Image (cartoon, rainbow, N blue to C red; front, side, top):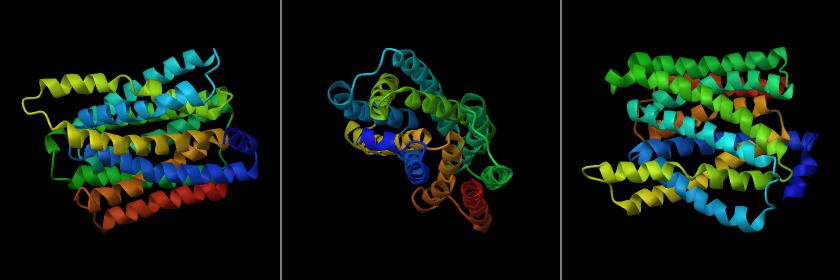
Length: 300
């Protein structure tokens, strides 16, 4: 599998695979966000998810893939710090605000800064038509956020705090997307990076979750929580793994923009699963997001 991925780098076929991987990551990331926001406390859910995917990745990291080269360990340390800050901010944002408010702002802040970061780090450029697509996509995402801000009736007292945290979380999305792309490109074997990323990344939040669970007056039953964690862990492996491989095979900026079509999937999940209100204005804004992603891909 590693040889096949490496053989696709810099080829038209590789670009096509990167497109499919980014769209798959978008769908799965929306599912992942809904899992974290759903039935259980988001801090506990995140701990269960991280524990699960670290346990799944451990045997592959230790016994299957080649061990990381020495220069990779400082990269893994930086990746761990970046993702830990991101997850702390995201869990706090979900604690303060509704899923359909927080998620669009988080995902909308990321692509623009990722495109800029990819220019400075990898020398990637967008055509004028692609920038138009980015603008259309961001108009849809932030329009969705403004609509939620105006019309949402629940959790109004913490809404401004939730939006502020969501913006900070979105900035961290841009940082981790760009740096993860640097990391997976620095590794000779992309699956070595993925296996060790999930192992190392999953070590911290389970400790926080245990402390939080013990401090609760009525802690939830562990069985359903861990089941959600295992499902979320599988989704996270597929989602984050897909977008990281996409950034190795294609442009980091394009992968970041296409992944943000996850906002469309998230709104549908919020409506159909979480029973949050979705009206015709939101449908129109979601269409803008999808249109922007199409323009970015066609413009390239």
